[in-house]
Image (cartoon, rainbow, N blue to C red; front, side):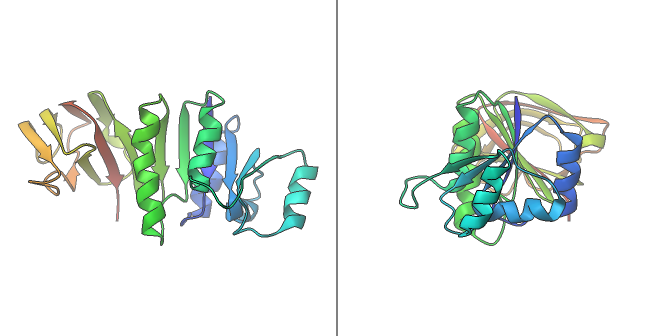
Amino acid sequence: MNAIIVTGGDIDLSLLESYISKNKYTTVISVDAAVKKLEETGKLPNVMVGDFDTLADEKRLEYYAGLGIEIVRHNPVKDFSDTELAIDWAYKRNITEIVIFGALGRRFDHTFANILMLRKYKKLGVDITVVDRCNRIYVKSNPFILEKRLVWGKYISFFAVKEKVFIESLTGVAYPVENKYLDNIENPSLFISNEIVDDYMSVIFDGEILVVESRD
């Protein structure tokens, strides 16, 4: 099962609308006031999650409840962000693939927490991808191959999830790598802004890496 989570950061509405239209059987979860973004696309959520302190619109909540949309309301005094509560709602319903729109934006604290959640839920068997107009971000824990024509943009970057990761080989890129550590202390920017030059890129590694496909 799959889900799309729409949360409160920056969102390219045309990209969101297109993605929902192409994934009609995916559960759409809106987080707090992000339902306003969905309204601009003409799309409805299946579930609304949050403490709704930002939305602060009881009539709007009543309207959506009247449409049969599930409202999952939390106390504003809590130990988790609304976005994490939305991810957890999906996880507890055996949803194993999630794409999040609005996870990046002006609030770096929320952005950083959202990126950290990728690893937390990866360990629980949930693959989460964070998407905006310029970036597609996810965690990998096994060697993998990417097809150049399907990547998000020109650039591909890697970061160690823990302090360092051993990269056995990185091929099909402008700057290939063999038997080198990706080390967040010694060389945190060494693996950024690479480019896929062959039809396919392959990376073999031991550990977990954060992958960022990006474009200007």
